[in-house]
Image (spheres, one colour):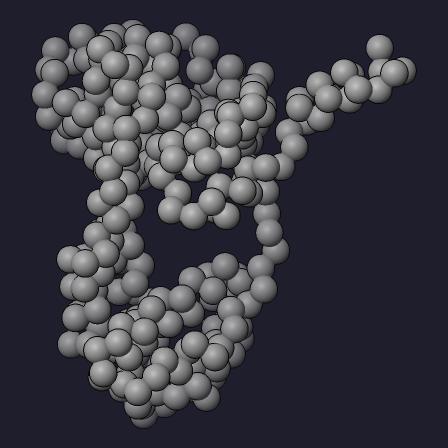
Length: 287
């Protein structure tokens, strides 16, 4: 009952996506099961039990990122209960998350992204759809769930923009380049339907994030790329290429839909192309 109330709050007040709600439900379901084995509950849990839960997760050799996410779910639920007076204080507040290794986002160099996007696609409706999908993901940097949620009416052809509904039901308008708009025009012309979901499967239903992941991976393999490419790779690639060409970090933050600038700052790594360009321009003996 407590977990259900918390999930209802996330959906109604915080605008959490179905994917986020499923993650919270899974994490909290595991934690409450752990508490039952310890003959306790969310209302009676203390710092000792939260630390014991963390130790149990470590014993299972879960990744640090997974453990940190599960602790964050527990901490959020306790914060919700404390603010509503169900418990006196948040027992997870004093428990530190495991320190994580900061990894650079995976992205495609410009030559590889060109190979992916310039590969001649199939002339079929599905082929045109897949090409338009790749172009849009790279042109806008939107999340895969945001892409799947697009309707035809969200694309403003005259202004060259797309209206995106992001996390927390926050709406933003993102520019779309000519190449992506041309690919969308070709796809929609072949589909002969300019309403409803923008990207559909062969039955006419809306594409799911998993389907988009399969499409992107397949197109990458067909392009001869020997690395794993996902929709999120294209999002990272968009941000990295924009930053490498001098785009302002706060502009990229707005385009990506990040609520905090610190999230966007991880893209400030130096790409090999940018490093060589600066070296050639700055070093007296480079050329």
